[in-house]
Length: 375
Ligand SMILES: *Cc1c(COP(=O)(O)O)cnc(C)c1O
Image (tube, rainbow, N blue to C red; front, top):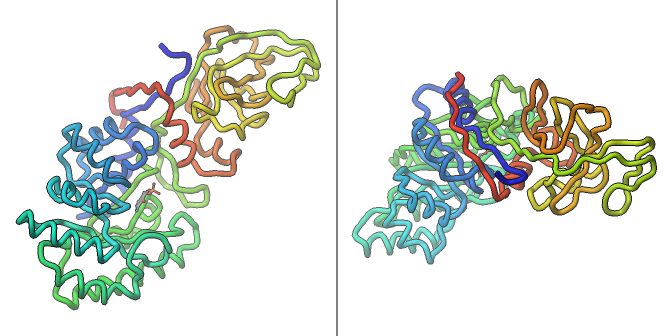
């Protein structure tokens, strides 16, 4: 057993998938978003669980992630959200991996390659309706469609866009994006073209914009057990999937005034009991939690004192009389009746739960717990 580890609760994932299903419209299916190692949770076990839970598609960001899914024997439709580069085009077509497509030169290469392979390449056209990031700008989509639909060897299987602010309580910008998206859908229909899959909703869109569900929804963060933002009206009861735990490596009584850690940023005012925990910023525990974070020991909160080091932190357990060396410490997750959530850590660090999951998820030791589904 390592000194510190990440636990991934697959029963919680199943629970969250059920919460997604309860909220999506009839005839809508799910794209399970497993990019960035499933937000740090471990792409393959998460993808397998989602596939067995009946998701229709998997989405990754890069083609190499799709290759990892395929190499692991996961034969499920895969969408690559950042598109496919020319060097990977032939392989992607052979494997029937679908790109989110937003560049005409990529479409032309795809068309030529598909024709040479005597096959049809499936794509999902990405439209930028106001995110300002990837996608054909919506006002240029009609001209793009004219060129795209004339290319042989390409099947427009889907069309998608992405919300910029669906996690805000004010939905007016999302509605504007949605109306632009509908304009493009109208252009498509006007050309006598029916696509099988229309999709725009992320977790926030799923929860708050039921008229934006279309044929597919693309939840990510909700599957991992966090709300998309603090601001969102949030009806779902989710279960966090990831925990970060460690053991007390050393416990010591220190006199008042004894500096703790790099930079001597913490000096106890009274004699104190300090526990050293083998987790640091190398394990994704943010250095911004220096003198700010809290952890759970024996079901009680203990403060991170001094700086977070690369592989160690120090916590004040003066008030936790029963704490002893080798006791389990929870840095993210639940212990007895209390919980340190990714949202709580994110708030202290002025970031979002997504980033906390991604960084803690790089921890070397992960354990996948496949408990009975508690639904
Ligand atoms: C990451 C991502 C999602 C999932 O978003 P969540 O907020 O995690 O639900 C959906 N669509 C696209 C294009 C994404 O990049």
